Length: 103
Length: 531
Image (cartoon, rainbow over the protein chains, first blue to last red):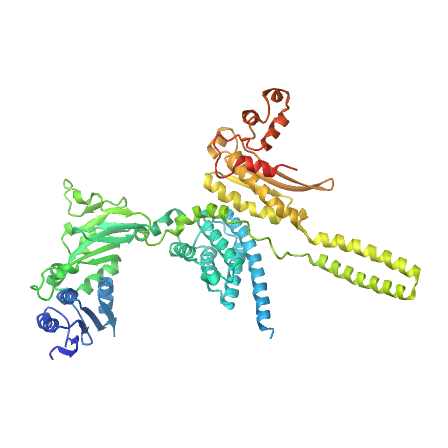
């Protein structure tokens, strides 16, 4: 399993998890995101290109990231989400809180 | 270049055609309403096609608002045509109002693109969204708020959706999931759980408690709350099979709005659940609920808008037009004959030419007068709508019978008749015909009848208006006139019944205990008095 890829550009960071956003990968992702926000990232983009599945802890992580960014005046967006993940976010009305776009 | 003129002509033709369509649509819609569920397809098709051609032309001339409104009415008519929607009085009312607006837009077509048709479009869209009976319609614009288990959590859903979701005997549940405990710990993913819900019912609304996730700086949260408003056929004793959450977190939303926790051991009927569904009345400030407001808006509007400008075009019988042409031709011939005779100084020729000319002129005048004659039906036609709308407002059941629609009257007289006749018809509806209960009590049919008739009598046209209502209270009329000092009590003693009734025509005499705004009796009778 390759590592999470974090690309920084000014106040923007793109986090691209190497695999599914699930209980096993959440701690590492959490650290990466927290680090980015600490360094002043305002715009955090989570690129789900390699992700097939998001479980409950994964959802919790994304929402926690959204909450943290909001506190810091920034915003979260999710890109390259699979159709199923977009459906999940829409059913949960999460897409009303941060931007979610598909593949 | 004549292009702009040509286009102007085209627009004028189109507008004239629209006016004709709108005029026939009203009568057709009322007939459709009369028919109720027994849909006369030809009739609906005719209205549909009229709306369709208004739409088509509007598209061509870039009259966007006319086009949009016509399009919406067309959609609704399509539903009626395909029997997906029954033409209830409420639906017909909305259609009538929409066509009223269309007429107004067509009247001012230049400004029409700036007109606000939002409420009409919304009302028509509302009709399309629910193909339900009209009594359920107001719920489209009502919001139901369902209080969630946590303080402050609220699920907003339109009462209409809630109602729709119940159809077919479905139960509505408010399920509170903890994504961590109820899903993660059971080795499932949120998507699997939601998918299983979707397979057995409908997810109406969800609310994620974002706060429960904490922030990245907090300890990873071991709770993530999601509320799901769910409609399914599964009964409360079976829902547990599908929804794997502790029963105390599944609530059944009952029809009357009360909320019952499934685990409820009867004695503790959660006090907090007493008022959970509070229908917050009409569409919380955003937009007024058009379906509910429109019908009331009409009478006020009808009263405030000045009479529409008189028609600028009239329909002419082709036969009449032909005889006009013939007469014009003959006139030219006679003139030529006369000119020739004058040139030849042929006195006999001049005499006969003048005679011929005089004959043709008289005939021409006669025929031209005829072109101004319009069937009284064009005037009577508008009363079906007036009677219908007023009767509905007043809760009366009234049939309008029209006789002698084909009788022709000069256009000017017809126009002059419009106001007094309207007053009289309104009077008959307002004061004449009793409420259905009163009528039944008086051994009459519940439905009252107003008769409007026109006939030729001894070279005159007689317009008759009659109702089978409560009649004129002669003594009340007399007393009112005496109280106003218009006649003396002595005069009254010698008056015949007929004369006493005629007192109603004097200004400010009224039999109504209270003068309603609907028809100011005195002014109405004044304007309808024969002069």
